Image (cartoon, rainbow, N blue to C red):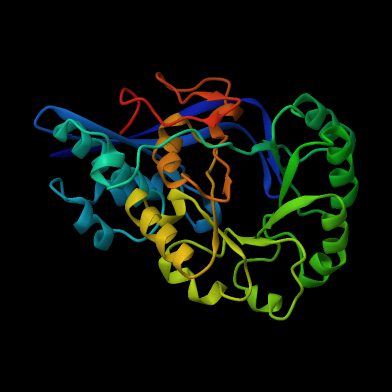
Length: 321
């Protein structure tokens, strides 16, 4: 078995901005695993917030033994982008060799479409209101906040899309005091969920804090080992395959989180349909699906995921799984 990794870049349809900066393209790593003439595919997005780069993740993958299996992979690499791409490529390889779909191999029910959030880029209130009007037909909008001008932006988006459900991602940009001040206004404006209001590692500041709008742990939740510290502080956990280190851990994290009483959100980095395809399986039946990465691209892969009024559909076998 051989493992190959290569960098690729997908141009975005428009500049995408969050509180940490802007980007004009999605930089990903594509991994192929080939055995006996059959090739499985996977994709990851190295994330600087977690100390990852294209180079460091490539080195992790290149250092793996060629014949590694999924079980051994879980011990060989930590949770993160490198393990994600290889894990998903191995799932795809196994499915192709077995002549079955990944959901069947994983013992899951046949997947269907899931309504997905659409993310509005951080901008001036006027520009965000215009974005909201353009996408007001979508049932669920996600707003990137985490700046001193958050309320004017949120008010503007609500004016632009009065009927849409709204979730807010603060990207670790608030303090407990700022969240407490904003919470009544978030509730007034009909916000469904707030992602990661405080910096990861400062979750204890949420102890005893009222949560009139449910809080979702994103940067504070990577894999199953994260869950115990989140109890009583968060209502929902955001599962991203680039954090869990692949579909294998993502499915296990989903099951354990739900057993502990957490709601589940399934999110993504900005990547292509290949990165979203395995996440669609995890997203089946969850509280919030946020797999809009391909909708932000000017150009996607061949055999892309299908998005329509029903949401994001499971992948065709020609793409993955």
